Length: 349
Image 1 (cartoon, rainbow, N blue to C red):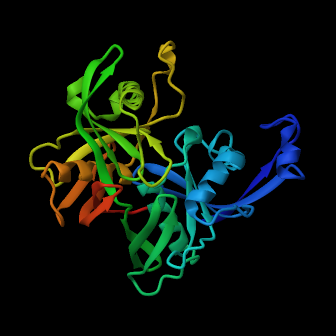
Image 2: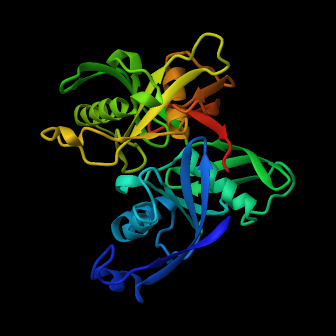
């Protein structure tokens, strides 16, 4: 499972003449664990990183954005990565409560404050390789993310993590029933909520969509258009971090009658900068998992509407019919916003 990913360049390869100056001898090795969660991959880097300055995971994240983004690029872009790959850098934490600090990075130079599927993958990698010793069948510990401390409760069976539950960062609503005027689509009603990223939440049927894999191209197009228009017309920021949005979108639709799940969703992520003058840029990419931070944001919006109570189980299915299980553990306040403490649970391999 744990393998070394050997990186070699010469002056005519990926970074051209910059390769030798970036990597010294133009050769670099990383120790990585490739993991998969509910349809979405993640690469967990456990060795080969330089010291990343910062007294918090948030500060380390900013340093990587400013000075070390070539690590993200080489690990998730072609030829060593592919369009839906993500990467998680396991780093020392200065927090006495956390085992490690985790900096999460995605396509398009996106470094989210939190990511549910990425953290489930990272926890699974750390437990199954013994980098965090699993004491008993129900280990509990914490990891520091740029968005704050995330408490972990796992279930183990013969060395395999069979369930990972995350107490996510406090999640809250920016606004409900906002109207966004989207070029060629017209006016779209959205909710805007934070669950580790800032989510634009949209009823899929309101824009004529069904959340099925065969409709992926149109889901990506409409999702990115609505998201960018929402960010332009209803800009938000986190009250405790410099983290503007919205930076991601989730479409929602009901599940069929009799389903044991609560709701269906598909998340659209950015992988190219949208230019309203160039229609070929009106696209994005789909999170194939049910999305942990998206589940948290949706639960925050449902709680704000009085449709989800503390302790209720919220089974959120994704576009591939995989499921994350959510729950509201309690309440909090973030910068004057009424917030929930969400739990999200799933499994990775």
